[in-house]
Length: 350
Image (tube, rainbow, N blue to C red; front, side, top):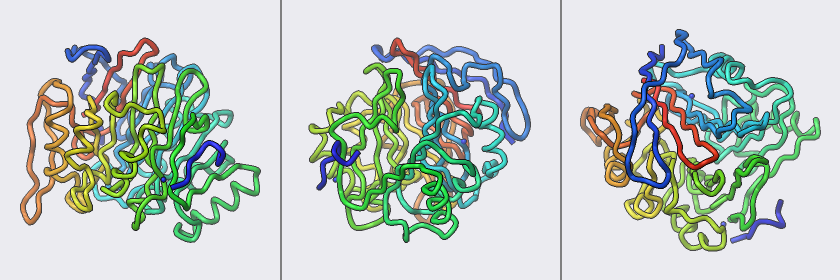
């Protein structure tokens, strides 16, 4: 792995919306799509959202103040977990048992290959992982020194290592110039680390990962990246081979914070994502309106919906919009389904 890196860098009510977005057109078609309702955790058995589907699925789970995203690989019994943790603070905050049920519903079993990617050592991005994955996973990618993690997480790392799991830790600034197979899938899903271990804070040192499917769908997982991370990506982007303006789906950085340069106007303009998703609870008033309004400008048009965002020293605002900006706090479980032909559907569950 190191030879490929350059140093220096999830109570839901089912709304039944399916937003079909063409990757080669700015038009957006709205269809009706029914999911089986199961309270308090949705059951999606017998739908297209299971592992080994021909489509690539990204699941953003409503965990409250934290982040937990799962990528199901197309035609492969494999998932990639991009962070999974929370400090609560939301009506529908999913806990470990709900996530375990969800994983079973989408077909994850003991034979499933699992890569765990931890953007940085803040508990709201990793504290569910030791209880979720008690058996050996396939591989682990983690930003930061082991001592920066909780004792429970350090014990998990040790147990995984003793079971022969390869752990790739990043403590020096770097990015990848070639495909990182563990973070992608074998069937035409590539991945690049755009930045990791950059800057002066845990947030800035977040691992930022881009993935692409058949060169027709692209997503970016940002962790809690700050302006330092953004600048590093800009300075080294050409060597990664990623065309950032082709981004279809992005996770708003740092749950939608507007501090320390997160979600800067230039970053939003450069990636010009069709769909922006913010994973947050009520802590820290995330996402901030100052962040979401930037994505309102660049995201695709869709059906009217609402989400809330926070303001400094003022009540939260309720935003009604026809732009593809969504938050787990108000819109619940968020699924995006990319087909091998390039189109994709976005499924907000509230």
